[in-house]
Image (cartoon, rainbow, N blue to C red; front, side, top):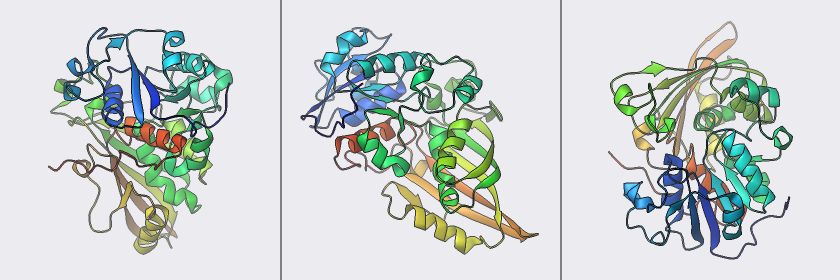
Amino acid sequence: MNEASIAHLPRPVRVAIIGATGYGGAELIRQLAPRPDIALTRLIAKDGIGKRIGDIHLSLAGLQNLGHLRVEDAEPESVAPDADVVFIGLPHRVSAQVGAKYSDLGCAVIDLSGDYRLRDLDAYQHYYEAQHPHPERLGTFVYGLPEFQRAAIAKSRRIASPGCFATTIALALWPLARAGLLTGRVQVSAMTGSSGSGANPQPGTHHPLRAQTLRPYKPLGHQHVPEIIQTLTDEGARDLTLEFVPVSAPLVRGILATCFVEVPAEVDADRLKQLLHDAYDSEKLIRVLDNRLPEVNAVAGSMFVEIAGTAGEAHNGKRTVVLHAALDNLIKGGAGQAVQSLNVMLGIDEFTGLLQPAQWP
């Protein structure tokens, strides 16, 4: 497999999207189609065959540079000659097989599934309840969270783009991890919008069934748990145990995470604020809030992340602090972050096409 950087690729860079009819595919197309340095060459899916993408994702109708493209079902051997980079937004296990084929055919691969995020095969099989099709390739993909992995992403041709919950929670807790203050038991609850369940409605995830309710699911067993632990351990956490309860919320886009951590009593409100600012003041996409708490409306439709901290009262030498984070699950928690990794791989401004503000209201 060719390990050379893709920064040298001639422009426009040829890009194929595998899984183009899903919500992640729609967001990738929205981000990439207007860019003169990108040429979308193939849109691959198992449904919508023969249709223009604007007839499936109505917001993309009439978008320039897409008029010649139709959704098609094609094998990697047919697509690879037309693609320098492929984005893969397919279900786990399927994605692992397809990604391996494209990588072997010489394409750079950015995989939005969970198949190559973990290095531990046992953790994958336990949390995804499946055998991995290519266990020998675990650990060969770079984890695509640019705030943590810029240098590695820039040199890689294989990116495992992070999960939406994992991005939110890891960004919230990273300031403590890098300071050596994240250890032991951490408790998290996070609410997510219905778009995270994908384009095909399922019982319990279809928006009309959740529009007037809140519903926890996969308590203490969500597949992003080992991903978060792996990421934060790499960043300085020690002996970390994560107790995570996700909640289906009655909104389309967005995640709001609330993380409870016990720290030494000397980590008071001022120290917590300083830790957050030290971690993120140089990051364009991360907003540390001092005078309000994060909310989804302020970031939905954008790449921006809001983070804030609250410190409780000290007791017996310890203090509970709460880290809050909000982001858009389809953009910074999904396709937009994959594009951010592409920009890093190409050696261009990391934030090209990604600094549009959220809509308000």
